[in-house]
Image (cartoon, rainbow, N blue to C red; front, side, top):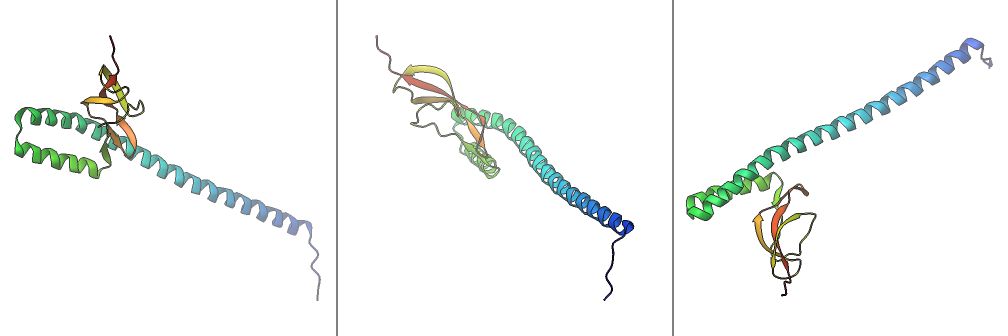
Length: 148
């Protein structure tokens, strides 16, 4: 069997091949990272757009609740229920404040009144989360033990 003795040209080709393999490997890794970043950015854009639209819809929902409190109309209530159902299907959930201790992460205290210390007495404006992120804190009246 004849032994192949590498010459300078052969060594240079092996070196070039190794460099090209390294560049290809890095390029593939860069491309995979780019795909991940583009996907992450796309998701962030969708979330921002959804949050913006749903925030505007919440203002309409507030008006519908006010109208329903004034009119007490069964047809309006059916419309409100459908509207709320659609918002929930998009990931919106109302922040639960009933009989809860005041939570500054999800609530804004707009008034203090006589009542159980640090507990929500009433809600001025409902708060909402979208996909577990607070998009509008609940505006609440918080109880304070008032003694004269």
